[in-house]
Image (cartoon, rainbow, N blue to C red; front, side, top):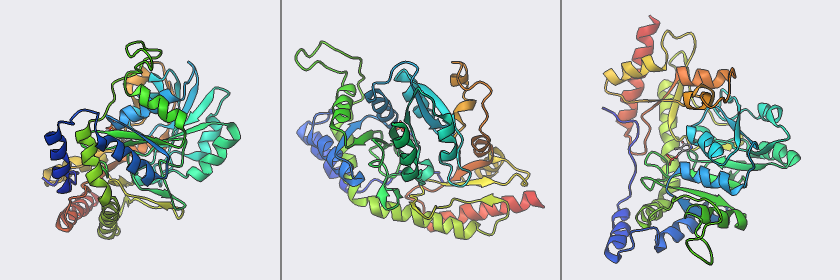
Length: 372
Ligand SMILES: *Cc1c(COP(=O)(O)O)cnc(C)c1O
């Protein structure tokens, strides 16, 4: 089976992780955590980095840092992972959805302004599958309405908007370092920000909000979202490789684009002129004319030894959220179409050129079979 993604773990990781083991610094105390935070924040062009145990935790501490009041609203795309909505809800606020751009799969900025209300406090752009949201344009909107931007850059490490890296462009930038992300610590996450007050709050929130004077006296509820020194050591080992990894992702995409460009009925990933996409995973969408949906293609590819993953199911179609009375009757046609007619192909950093050719040939054969 050609797997969808396997993590790239550089050999230097072993020495750094061994250092933790040998020295006994295996919990969240330890120098690799500070080093990973400093180096990652610098890479993103931000002042502070607060490392946490996952991307989901990063989104949660970022939302909590905003000190939202019950009923405050945060505008986010329907097409994303549920972590975005759970973070907003956990912070006591209300997620308000917009649809996505069919070309970039990123939130449709034309819809954002229409969804603003007197209760809107923040917008959460999600850089989808490595393509950045046009944060310059979004900043124009949020500045006019005095809103905070919380980026979800989990899939877009190193992506750029007009030459500037994501994560550091919003007020808060959230990352995941899960095993399938471009930089990985196995499990892990981080929030970067230029705002020292946000950073202090998040450091407290990730560590149970221990009291400053009296440790076990808490003014606020926090979580244990600490990352371990072992995980941070993996992260530090990854950093020198990030540009090479992004280049690899871009080459994987170029190879697939070349091999699939002539296959009728497929929509392939694109990159806007102002953007640098890092093509986190190679996603395709099947035209409505093809007598085949995403699940059918996935099953046929699996039968030929090729693993795939579906794209996100929109937030407005999530039973867990509908049960809470959210999004009743709302429709987001682009998100609905991506969920049904899209999937992503094997495109992890360790995939070989031969594997890419095998996958592309299988896709082309299946499309030609069903079109006959
Ligand atoms: C992976 C991902 C997350 C969540 O990260 P975890 O580390 O798995 O919690 C959040 N947002 C997006 C867009 C993601 O792709």
